[in-house]
Image (cartoon, rainbow, N blue to C red):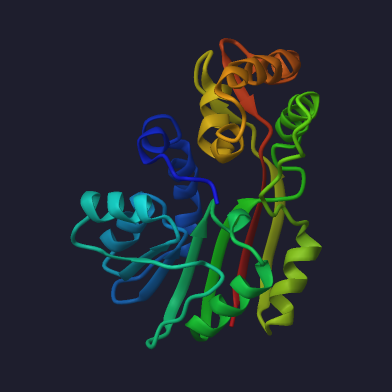
Length: 247
């Protein structure tokens, strides 16, 4: 599991929850509703949900992220738990998840927990990395690792619409909306790609001798510059899957 650097996350990767704000319109939280934010990170969107008058709980597997969430938003309840192994006594009107489900495996176990935690008629609204997400970055990273004799790295789950809809339908969800779309994402400045690698592939880089880390990052930047570097910024090749399903 990637060790979550909450300072780097909040300082350089605020786009994660800023893009997620668009998903809030689809969720449309209502006052008094009971809502779970699954994979809440450092709690920014959890707080937005709570500000609508909904009773929200944030859940994440990262102790450092939850500690930061509790510090940022002490008025909100946050819990530490695996997204593939959680349960609540009182069911939810809705479960919301932004930029988290590609970290949670196996996806079938996560879908089962989500289904069981919803009220009948409850809604599941999610967006995360879909098929082809950061494909160029992963390929460049693995080429650089291979040159050092290191194994390929890809800890994520990036499904197609058909694959993920099937998983939900197997849990008896009714999938009412599913889309896969390009979302090129600006990684600000010359160090944007290096910051992304440190943030989201940091556990991979820590296994490499520190003397080789800068070399690998330089090699990845060199290989991707012509495709992903424009006007002074890096542009990550994000593909997002967005789904809405009803229990």
